[in-house]
Image (tube, rainbow, N blue to C red; front, side, top):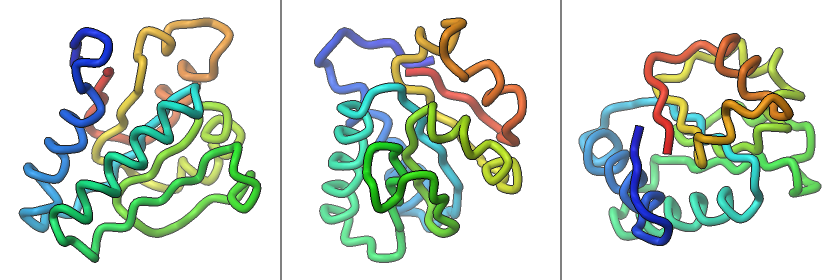
Length: 135
């Protein structure tokens, strides 16, 4: 669990940790970043894109398969290292996601993962992953 005050840079901290600890060292890990809010997915995507550019890494694919982008609606993407998804889209595509094995699942605003109205309980119990990081 990563806990920091609002606006302190949780997203940047996690993205930098991913790049510094794994991607820059050419350690191939599969990451699924889940959030219930579009703005948080946008922030993670832009931060990762900036870090990718700063690091000059062309081999890292940052795949947004948000539910709100019509081109990606209900369409899973098969390649890349960092996948960003709304909890709703991930839940709706659980069968596809169960075919993958993630090294790390990140739940942004993790306190929402315990809410009974969200799909997190089913996602986290049925996905294959090694490490779960709540932010």
